[in-house]
Amino acid sequence: MKKLLLMVLIIFTVFNCSQKENQIQMAKEHIEKIGKNPTTRDINEMYDNGKIYYGSNPEMALLYFERIVKDKPEASNYLAEYYYNKKDYANYEK
Image 1 (tube, rainbow, N blue to C red):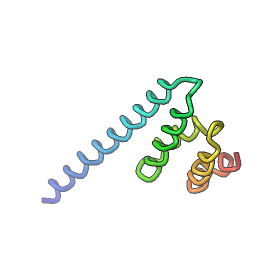
Image 2 (cartoon, helix red, strand yellow):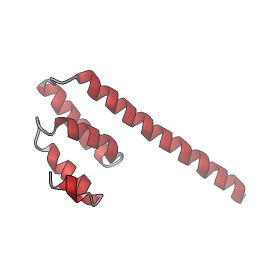
Image 3 (cartoon, one colour):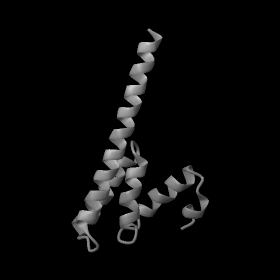
Image 4 (cartoon, rainbow, N blue to C red):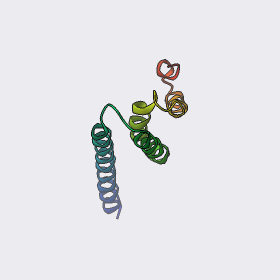
């Protein structure tokens, strides 16, 4: 019984990690597709996506917020909170 439970936990962990990596890759592709000159709609969409993913996958949200921080200063609040929670004070002060 313990071995079965251990196997299920291992499979679940591997699947979950793989799923997060796929989500991050999809976010990178989405950001690259938008390009260097995003429209206001693109900026708002990335901001909303970042807010949605911030609770469940903050690394993915970080990609969106870093991309739009110059165009939408509100994103800097989320970045500051993320870096503060990670105790990365050098990036927090940016």
